[in-house]
Length: 259
Length: 281
Ligand SMILES: Nc1ncnc2c1ncn2[C@@H]1O[C@H](COP(=O)(O)OP(=O)(O)OP(=O)(O)O)[C@@H](O)[C@H]1O
Ligand SMILES: [Mg+2]
Figure 1 (tube, rainbow over the protein chains, first blue to last red):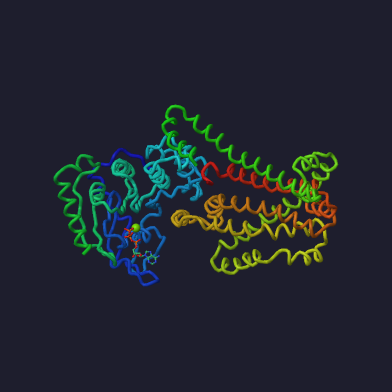
Figure 2: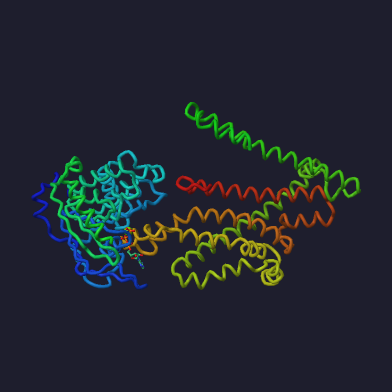
């Protein structure tokens, strides 16, 4: 894990080597449902791309293809790393393991030794601010803390590509906004390539270097918005007129895509 | 009903001051009901005994104190304890075998849907066979002692283990399974680290049911296979045929206590093992 000082914006731009790429990707399920058609999208190191789109347009399918859980029925997937992190909408913690045990799980499955595992878990737990809760069971945690544990679990694998499927969708506004800030800080520190799915346009604009809008099923990319605000991001940017204008533009595109 | 309403209204307010008081009071109230019912039943029993005594058939329904006398009589007591020991032995041997067989059966079925489709119907068939119809055959094949009793016990107690283990193994959420899949976890790892721990709560529910049935099996087995060490079932038949009312009732009570004990012990065991993370109620 390369814990560095926050990366300067110009360095982010320099590093934009593609880590994840969809080239003309289409997905037709065996039952005939066409979930995606002709998706072209690349995500490079230091890029954080958010996808917004109407429900059922194939956003989760996109991530499942990227992670290898599903294979595209057409087109090619470019993946230049095997360190992939996947954060599901639910925290999917194992209820019989405490936070420490849950955070160690992926490293354990990857066959890493107990000592390394413990160190990595300790580091990841610190990264998400869950120190002191190592011995707590999932049922003793709040929804936000469970999500942090889930994030920490993925971090132990040093992901270079990080996939998020509406991770904060079930959280209240305040917790969500705090976790957004955490995620931005982690992004600046860890320098991964992020592909983030959300229903909240404001969240997408705030977190991302790029926002793409998908159309209703079959999902296609119908709009791309580069977000010009510098990283690390100033939380107050959310209250600026420029921010509001961008959110407006993306929302408008989303509404067009819906109809 | 009225008390519980008052409880729920006052409890939250009190809890902020002294958290222990309401809970202790509640547990005291909780015991009042069952104890009252117990005394009512003893009273009814006395009434019934009096009716039978008047008809000169006192041995059909002896008075509770006569039963207590028989139960504490040293000779009867030692007969009862011997029989209890042998029945427990049969029940626990059968139960252990049923647990192992049932879990293996369920694990095999959980590996592929075609295996489940092929094997599950036979678990249901096993459940549907009237065991009593098989009993004479079991006697012929396995003799009329310990072995035959254990086999009856297994047949009676197997199904809950099979079905509850299978249910538990399949209760794993799709995303949790995918989490393992993403790391390329093998079937064995999936079973050991995900499915089996997730199945523990329902395995314990099955275990508790099976344990109760194992006691039934041991006593039923006894009544058909009278050779070898006599268990409670044998004793019950002997007492019944000799019209030894008080002894018969004390044997029935001991058998019931064994059933209750097994139920309580396995319930407690379940809470001990998974109660930390799983709430059974
Ligand atoms: N295994 C499958 N077999 C058949 N159809 C599927 C399968 N998985 C998903 N679909 C269909 O594909 C479409 C896209 O599903 P997907 O889960 O990717 O949508 P989504 O954009 O993530 O929706 P949401 O925002 O509600 O999460 C839906 O119409 C869904 O019903
Ligand atoms: Mg989805």
